[in-house]
Image 1: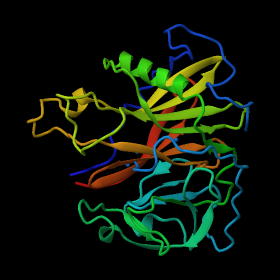
Image 2: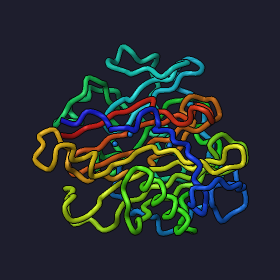
Image 3: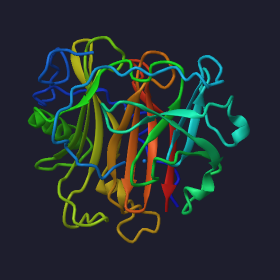
Length: 328
């Protein structure tokens, strides 16, 4: 039974120096290997991996929800799997509708990176009808315009701008990011010849004018839903690259490797031998502090989930704060 998305510690925060030349030396750079001037993130996807176009957007503003009765400084975060939690000075898991601090019929809904947020009405209901495979004891939000698995979404109630800084997908300089992925994999004991970039997202995490980059990559074409460690070296990795004190540093948000998937060999009853895909679902300021959180979706052949990562500071880095999932 699928519980929640597996994570790498509190971020397996190697925040290890990962230079653009990936020669294991520390280099100084203005920002994480992007080809533009400086501009202002559980469950995952089968979306077109390495986005085919680069989308430039302006910061999106969120309209105050006039009908909301939420107390100041409170946000409710939901996805297909159910209500993930509440921000009320801290992250709190919701297990019952009585845990909700107010009634607000409109939800700001995220689609793809850079899309305008849409305010849609939603009804809080029991979660069991959404996740028949592995029901959670959390309430869910029914939004009629959205379908559970076919159209991934994240819905938020909050009375502050949810996207205060720019975010965009891009496709340039893939060689630099392939090298970065290979370098990190080598540090984890996996040597491969190349990597397939599935998604690159450039965003200004905290609004300091310096871009961060999220890199999602795997081994390439997949002909099956199962790992076959005897014939190839499958992996899926999600990296956050950030400039800290003039150096490009790299944190691992998610990592799936053959050795992790087959701890006792293919016949191990405790193994989880499925290929998994990840996607940045949303970049949003979910707690109103001006720094955007990372909502990272995961998906495998009969399940999906979502993990929200908060970037605490340059010493601690990103940590998972909310997660939910549905599947076997």
